[in-house]
Length: 123
Image (cartoon, rainbow, N blue to C red; front, top):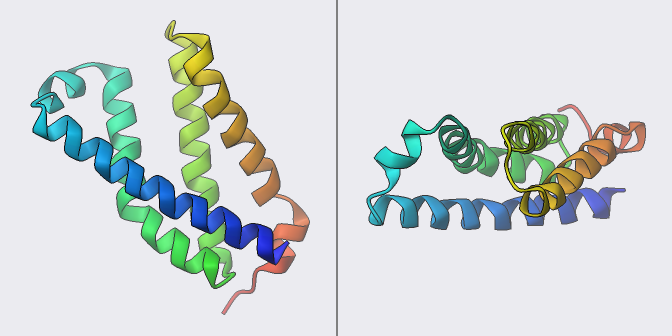
């Protein structure tokens, strides 16, 4: 389980890099104002900024197998799942959203499992 949690930490670190790149592309293209005016786009941009700011702490703490890191990654996955559900409810396309929802819910199941919490320490 410890190795699996560290693999999750690496993937969260990669998603931080992708999120930062996405925000840079949105800002450089001048689409930030237009994107922020739509509720779903504002939710997605908020999630990207949440990932960029809180994700680095989550990665370091999860790599160290601390419960704080586990809780932060659970929060990030929960926000991602919520965003996917809102996208589906608001009439978004099924195929781009469904894999993200499956991954987020699967990670939530893994991270909320008792073995994951036992693998982490509270220091």
